[in-house]
Length: 315
Ligand SMILES: [Zn+2]
Image: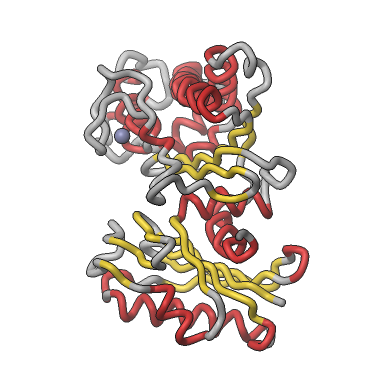
């Protein structure tokens, strides 16, 4: 039997065909054409399924899983007001796919799917419980308990990015202050870095400041840290330490001690991960101290589609 997983992004749709024992049989990527509206995007989802079924018999297809941005009503199978899919209010994407392909179809949000992908195919294969954290424009996350996504009462569980570590901290887009997203979301991270680099003309990053906003990116900071720039190292260590404190809160609340970190900023590697481990293990309750394990995600951009394919495997 085979399963298809589809990750619907604002720019591209990524899809995978998986077979027995989680082997990957085929992958493809198509433009989303988000600006052309829901009918065209649904057409692209059908095209992705058609493309993958060139590699397997349609009779063997046991189901389709979909990861989608923003709020997803996973019980009714709807994508609700996704921020990067203009013209979508409430689209019954599950019903549309099921009617066309006549197989079970499941849907969940992209951060939950990324975590589930790590659980079945990546860094979380050997643990039953963990929190998957994706550092990107925002700080996304999914809580995996007993190898299943924890949704909470209304399906909005797992918003680790809006864990506040300072009630007087910087304002977050959600209306709260001091959320971890307001420190580690890409634009916040870069804005904080700019402030710090301004005082360090000796840093190789200093020259980028005069090129206007947008010239400095998290990648520049990671590269400078890898080249032993102490300013870049401190920026990433400090960001990691703050994330570690939020992780200590989560470990205390959930008694979960494995945290899997992915997304663009996670490529910063050692300084970031050292900071996270220090913050988390230094601030968690004594019972968890020294036991919190911070793992890099293993699947990169494939996590979402592989998690979507795994939605069918979980009850
Ligand atoms: Zn927030």
